[in-house]
Length: 407
View 1 (cartoon, one colour):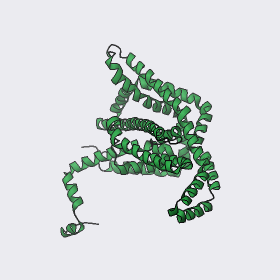
View 2 (cartoon, one colour):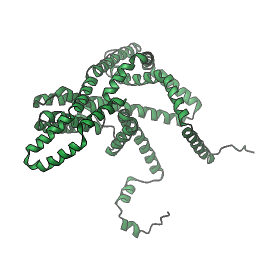
View 3 (cartoon, rainbow, N blue to C red):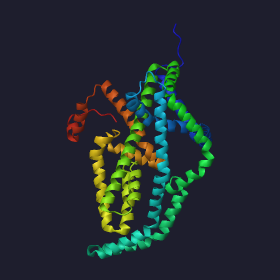
């Protein structure tokens, strides 16, 4: 006589769903306690988190040196430990050089651009009204805009904007000062994360092997394969995002700087750094950078502001149509609507950090949903032609078929 199991194949999913709903309920019921527990856990594990993030970033140039450079000159079989060490040293040199460049050039220039924008908002509106008054076609429009601007109280608006940026931790100016002021308090965490990242970088293959051993010993092989697939998909998505966005920002900033020098536009260094840096945020970044650059240039010359707008739009089209396919490669493979929604939702939830990580996360989710959809359609024997034929059917034709819908 067979023993009856406590959970069979039908009741097991229901039990899991019920248990998950209970956890979610108590999680929201004791939200403050859960939040405190998560913050405490993060403060303890923060060196490990820092180390993993640093190791992930370092691994990108390290793989390049190890696989594309040193294997041509050094026999990996004879010097299997020398190649990773040399690759790691070069990767760390590049990492520290980029961090130094960001702290000494990028962040100060971004802070100067935002400060200059806030200080010159009243001047911009005065120049805008003056420019419209000089144009006969815009005299009526100028009067209406002038009345609107006077009702806005621009001086009060700029002071509120400056107070808002100073009060937010994610603002460029306040974030920079916050980072610099907290270095002394987190120096031990950074050092521990640095040491941990060295260990992870040098022993990544052993860590991966040992992790798979533990997973295979405790879970089914199919589940372990799924975990490995998701992990490698996530790594590939984030690494491609960092590589492509870094090359995109660097190329756009350099081209913008050279073009502004040729066109003799004002503030080429500061605006080019702004355009290149904000390009890391898809869709919204280029729009914000172009708007700030136009305002700053418009104060000195409205005509040059229009030239700047046309120039930026031209180099962005050149980047998307020519530079990406030839040098950088393909995009993440996401449809445009997914990119827009991911950046919009990520920015709304987590600010600038959410905008940065939303696109690779959306790539992982989109790929998993696409794989699951294809698998289910194949199981149901539904082809692409069936889907297209359903799209092409009109309301009248579907009604004539007298389909038996049940609502």
